[in-house]
Length: 188
Image (cartoon, rainbow, N blue to C red; front, side, top):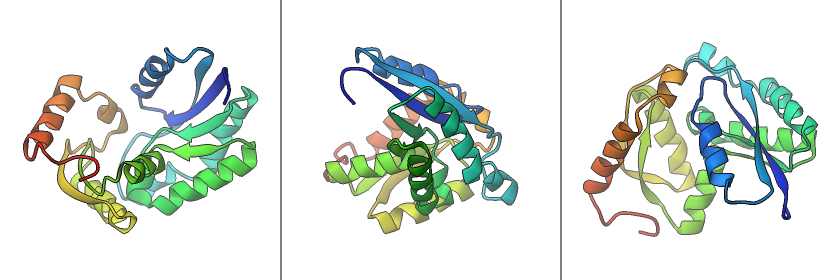
């Protein structure tokens, strides 16, 4: 991307964590800036009304507004592919990249790529989601060579509530998952 680059993020409309986190992560990268577009997401579930929030046309429209800002890459900063199916994310990456002429990625596919590079096949997973959504995530990770050693979740289906889980609760849940087997981790 060179010394200066604009990175485009499409995120769920109700997510209030991505923008501050992305800006904080990029603060030490001179000339690299974050630019945001949103798609309306209010509920997380396996029903058709929840699924409709993630239609490809909505992502293409949001990505188009980011292309107007001449971003160098576009990422879907959401995890819907983890429960809807990784093929949905792969289709989105291909369509957004082709339509906008820039590289595209998703959070879920990026995490899977990182697991592959690290040799992490057995992982612990913490999500804000409900039991049925977590079950779908687990089922979608297995064919990718990822198995869960441990799992924790907060049982939420309201998208905004997912981004409002206090940092302390998240940290405590991570410690609880790690404490179950402190030797587990990437490459094991």
